[in-house]
Amino acid sequence: QVQLVESGGGMVQAGGSLELSCAASGRTFRTYAMGWFRRAPGKERVFVAGAGWGEFNTYYADSVKGRFTISRDDAKNSVYLQMNSLEPEDTAVYFCAGDNIPYRQPRDTVEAYDYWGQGTQVTVSS
Image (cartoon, rainbow, N blue to C red; front, side, top):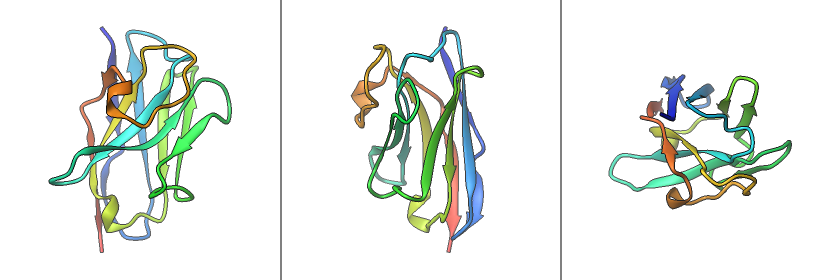
């Protein structure tokens, strides 16, 4: 059974930083894209960042470009999201996602991912 478990959420003041982690188990994601999505209160789940297989294969939503960095450690079967210069608008539940088709570029739609974590809350105060 594939499981994705996020950690690292919390509360931070505007301008601060947090790093989210997502540990996968049940299969290796080395050749599969992984992504981060978020759902703000009262809104739909939206794409934040994605990392495909291989190095330098990353993709970001415009709203986080230059502030967030996605990385992966395939030896640990994990993906990370470093979030800097956080803004109150970044407040959301953040979800880790895993693709089920190998060697694809990271996608920015919910439908492209088959595996999901339970989410971790990030709250940014002004």
